[in-house]
Image (cartoon, rainbow, N blue to C red; front, side, top):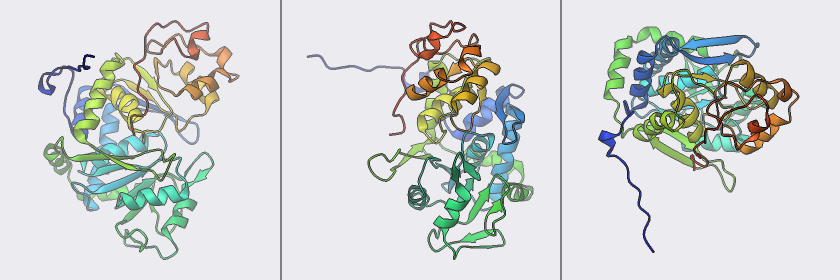
Length: 352
């Protein structure tokens, strides 16, 4: 029997790659595609918001400046507990620009799993949203952090999580030791942007960039570290695998806390200056409406989600004619407006 052989170009000769650090990648695409539409999101009030690459960069840089002022440096672990909303992306790249490590917390987590993730990752700063679907993260965190937790002049103290220093909510909540997002951002005034640019330059591809967690189906979730090189290579390549260009409109409601969706949906879209259509979490009826009204060209979903899309009332009235990067083997092929013969590359189980 002959052995299998895998071959490819030497990394230094591979076409289509740019910076191999997350902050370098982000800076590069935001400068190159500054005026392009980067994100479309319906906020919690239902208002549709649009962000250009330039706006996305400015907000992320502001978060980075605030983080540096709060003491974040190379290797600081910063947790993000949010659904797919602009703040997840801005905070993620803000952390990377400040030299920190993004700890992507799973919004499906039980209270016990969430406590485990915060503990094993030694998170020093935690960004979160008020809740997702039927989960109230404020209540969960109050239970997890304990009644002895204190907040003194912006510094959080807990004997349960002794490394945790700040807990910041992007939504409006009034809890004594939970810091409002906008108040935290005032710290940005203490740090000049040129310092953040210098930190971007000092980031190395071999540095730790991200910590993802396995799904925890057989035991407690396992922490998985990724370097900047690993995350950015997958991001640059995903745009090529999906044959995307700057006119693409990419939708996926799967969490960015999965490394596959981080690279394929988020990284792949940004790598070519395309637009990401955000949905906080998967709701089939809303998803069909977004796919149709936003003229989505590329879809990344799981098999059970495709089945739910087909079963919605909105399905029969939808228009999927814009789709040009959707595999005809899934349910869209049964819709009269769908006409695409593109074959999707497989990408499941990437986090594990």
